[in-house]
Image (cartoon, rainbow, N blue to C red; front, side, top):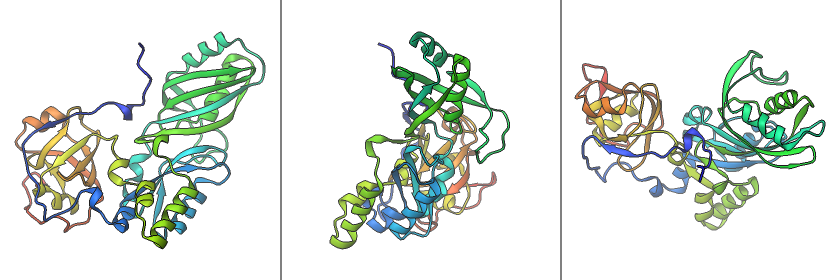
Length: 338
């Protein structure tokens, strides 16, 4: 049986141990132990964007609804497009840039301008899988220059007269509207995108998607009745948002140094993803499962396992506040702390 197509972010991951370590219960807490206020502060809403408003307008609504100071969305959707629009809240806005490059999946309808045999349609869909070149449409927020994008999979699901229901898994920044136009050109009949819905974005899928009405109700249940269950389900932890990234689990002694912006030195590692390559974006986590920071790997997994010193990952975005864990570090010769 053929394997179902998947995005790079859905690849299975495995942790390997560099050195065994224990965590001190006096410092930090698991994401599940956070209060509702902390859960919101370090939370992300997997929002089901409705058709009509812009992504910026939806972000403003969420900000007002939850009474938070900052909201950032993970990947703009056109006003008419619906589906997954991650909304990072407060401290979680620091990881918004990590959500943007994650692979996306869409389900849409391509309307052909003339009838075309289904066999030919399937052939052309197959031709567009892999690396393609796109020039952003006239109505776009980026410079209109030719750029490469990867289509991981592109499948026609159903065809009824001139309408083709399809599923597309693609690299971030792919213009599906332009993709539909280009396929219509190759088919020789012309075509345009009739409907589009985002169904996956990194770790987010439709399994735990939340509508604006669900979010309003969940917040009201908590504020008015003290019921925490709905708001905890409507908002996921920042750790769940970056679940698709390879992870480096660090020792308690290295946590506070990263919170102060230090790079991660090899001795600070307890466990790590089995398939890390240099320049990979990585999530640096505590032994309790808390996200400390996002970084860029400077070694591969093998190097982190066998080296005794050196910088394993360069810290780029710090999420945890200093002082949550005790300071147990001093400046190292290699510039890292841990």
